[in-house]
Length: 50
Image 1 (spheres, helix red, strand yellow):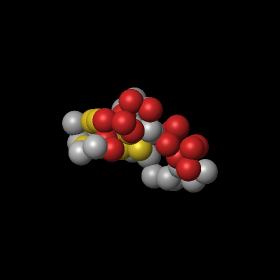
Image 2: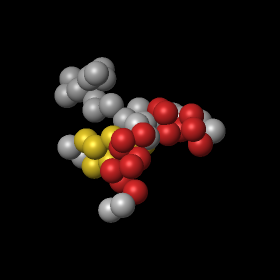
Image 3: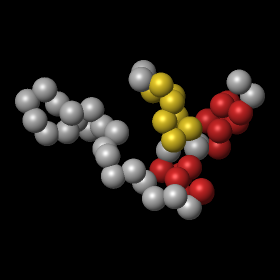
């Protein structure tokens, strides 16, 4: 509970309706490649929303 507000303030963590996600900045800071799987919600009839 202490780290989350700090990480959000730095821009490394983002609150979403589905939970918390690491931002692109967090991956860059850690030197880790972004996951290949898209975090975007798929649309009902194909494609990707967002």
